[in-house]
Length: 471
Image (cartoon, rainbow, N blue to C red):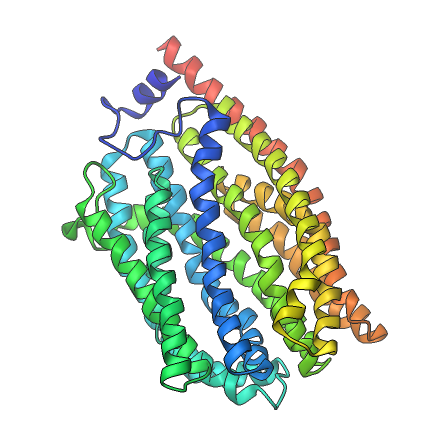
């Protein structure tokens, strides 16, 4: 299979050193070993975010927690479009590695730096001039809106670093390296916790101190990734002479990345709508939901790690025209995420309320937390299935299809649900049932699309082999 692929594309030699070749070896073992550092990266990322909330909860108060929590969906809305472009970088670097196209790999890595910085600068201006406006549209509680605006303004000064870290770590994952991004995140995260305590306890800051700590820690992680890629040997090396835009490679990245970013942004839009619904229930509901978001996000982090990992496996093996490994990657990921989602979800349901009572003594906050936690955590495995299906479709190059399905099955459904069902009933729990229903609906839509795309891929590879043999 590999010899045929190399002859068809005209490459004489495999690429020079990469971290891991995802096109050969025991597949399930490789997926697990590749996913564990990625899973730990995502979990630790949220551990450090939770540390922000914990510092505010313990040393400042529930109002500061509500302020920061109310900005989460808005930050996602403003950043996910551009961070989603990093998915395009990951897919195309993985695919070019599978195709043994070294020059395309170098160009794609090179263009990622100016592209990330360009997007980051745009976000600085959007964040500075539009934060208050967006918070008002979301009906942010008047008791916390000033704190929320202050947090956003400081946070968005560091967004270029956030985007840059995502681009650099996407390149490293595409080469099979999920360990060093984990190490760099740990370094940045420990620094983040220390700076949180310094700014809040020593300097007496509140939400802006937490925002500054996040910016500095992200900058350190991004810098370490850049240094690592500059020092790398082989094909996945960041070279100064390649740091510019290339039409073919840029269009290929944007073709995958823009729909992926739009898809993430569409989810963020629906979350903004839901956050507005949460805000309408008052300060206690905002605080309880913020605490719950810090809990159920760990389940998502675990299952998203598997989905992101599979995208790299599918992309490299698609480039190498190895259909069997493409198909098996999808199957293994669906099984892993189902088991993982059910197990972790049950654990969080059992431990959630006792743990939150250690953080806050306000009964109404605990009540709102418990409602969200039970509904979301017990059904989050459905989100895991949806993520695997969505990322698999992206890995096969159908990013626009993934975006459209997500728009219909999840985003529009949630928005209509909140605007109609929740407003008519005034039932807080129905906000969270909209997630469960949308995950199930979107997954069901994805299944026939993915099966069809896999069949087309098999025919495409078989035809190339037949043409090569006959030639």
